[in-house]
Image (cartoon, rainbow, N blue to C red; front, top):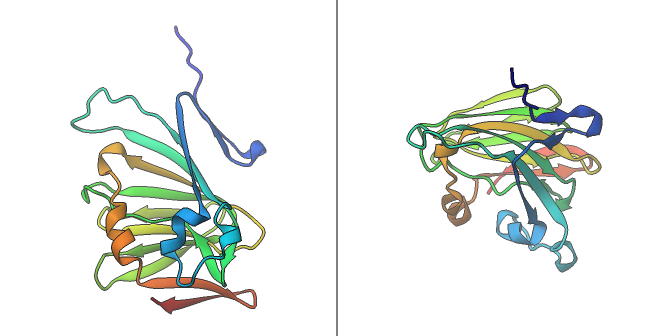
Length: 186
């Protein structure tokens, strides 16, 4: 009997995803300038905004896809009071849904149907979030001191449509005012 070593999501190491193979990528705040309502100060542009680590899956049946597991590590900062956020995206193939789970930190999952419906769900340790494949989604960190860590599970065939969000943005923004979360229309 062959015993294979599984990947791990280690809480003792602040929910570090350890698996082989693994893909990682990072975004700096300057790469997200278009997401914020106000001009980003130049000294913030090199700040690490977030990192994503994903377990690479084998594509034995690319026609049906395979499941992907990833963790997003969203740093705490604001741009003129607007909370740090991920770029956000729609799925290229809206037939594929996704799940998020809050690992640590506090924030929101912002969702938008691309037309009228927009809503947010609070993220906290242990929260579970179903994302219908037709909704754009973005993570928002509402802490000034703690990283927001969120696990995600999705089908690799869902793809990422960043261009739509880059062109239009989300219709709602999240700010910290005197330590309280406030929302405003774009």
